[in-house]
Length: 441
Image 1: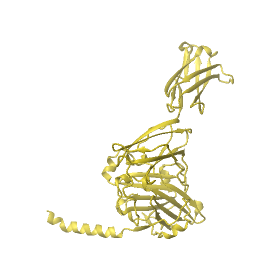
Image 2 (image 1 turned 30 degrees about the vertical axis):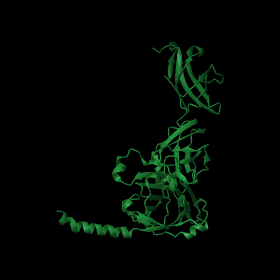
Image 3 (image 1 turned 30 degrees about the horizontal axis):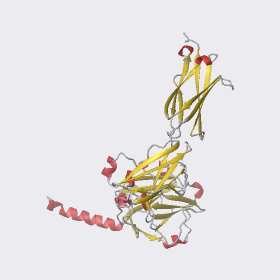
Image 4 (image 1 turned 120 degrees about the horizontal axis):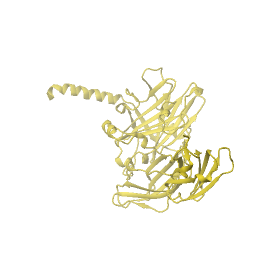
């Protein structure tokens, strides 16, 4: 049986070898000068990198407009500059202004795929507004199907900027090695693909993919990259942040560490996420030392804004060399810090109280404060009832408003104000209810 299939096996092997030879190769060169991530590719360093062309249409569509890219690297990162030539700049389609929304990929956008040989591949998509969609997936389809952790649970700590000109738009993406799970080991050459979506016309790719942008077997090769070895001693795939709440949060993170006794400097930053380069990180006091195969990191930070998406960037540096060992971004929105629900919408006088169920979701260190209640008649501006309750901790809290303090039947509105975090945070909510003296039957 094996002898009968030998000619077929040899033919298949030869076909795969031919296909591998037909895959494109992109050349990265060492960066020989500073590059500011502003999307413009204007520095002299870019001219030393070979211009990569040959973006091919995917599926049935008219020929794509010219798309070019160049690749630079240094000891910390790989930087790609992509130029998208465009005849009708005023017709670019960019409707998505939400981070990690799938609509980014349907807008006029570019996508970078990297396969560094560590068991994962990475996707970074950027639309013409600078909004980003990124993801990490297993290269093994079986592991990908079995995994309960979706790609959206990973946010890449890249520096990204977009620039628009009269006849083109361009993107610069700096990908730090420390954000690509180097603990698992990198193999060379890396595989990559560069893709462009023209929302009016269709899709195009540098690699000759047949099954869409994620056709890993058809990705091209990245040559010339000189990777740092034995630097990435922390397993970032095990990094899990706890739920972040409004106020002062104390965070304890634990990571598998390759070497015991290694000293780390930990830096972080917190801001409302906006498109563009990463913010400056600030160092936490002291050194953090790995012990018993693990590094424990403890620090605190204060979240003041509960509405926009927040970006927490964490960086670990080796104290001795100053090199980045880990760089990670955590994007989150804090839960609504204060919510009030009346037990019923209609209360009879015989019930004695209007019961209000409150949920306070503020960090334990910031929850202590005061909950004030003012109750107004339907058209009143002066409250009929005023109450104040001390708040000691987050969680559920029930309030009872005495119905006897409300004079007549009708509609009332209760305005609740939560003051917490030493008076630095205040939240308001209004609810309505009816008071009726007796059942209507």
